[in-house]
Image (tube, rainbow, N blue to C red; front, side):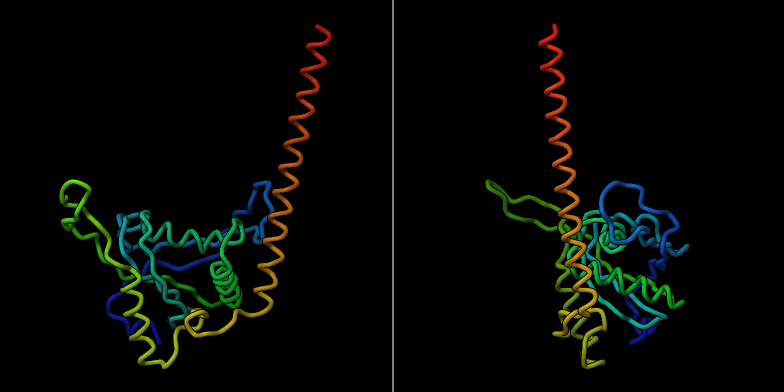
Length: 214
């Protein structure tokens, strides 16, 4: 299905591979993170606004993934999990989507992000002692279910990158890469902790010697 058939979404922007290389000391899978270039018409206020939202990844205008979020920092926070995956400790699904996006970009294809959203709603809810009026997000999961149901009714399957919903396994090379990355990250943290303990012990011995001389 092409995104132009969807009437409820707005274009957020497109994704590129950043020119900036990772400069930290942790083990990373990707030296360069992905970067979201916002559409010039995308409202700035929506970037970090708390919303119930549906996000859609497209490749050359074709829908590849539908997801949902109620992140307090909005679409910006939601996308950061995908864009920085491979430089942090991601789950396997976000790790995989990051790889898929990179593959498409390297092929010369355009990967875009679209979203549909609903603002928080004002409702009266019970508290310990009395009811109060509060702003709450509606269920983004319920929105996602509707999107997926309608998509499936037309395509007779879910989007390509919605592996779990399609009952499919991720490509073995992606799963293997994820496993190796997690092991390397854990090993790297272990080395850092060991070095930290060694430095503390060395400092402690130095202090003791200094006190002894005093």
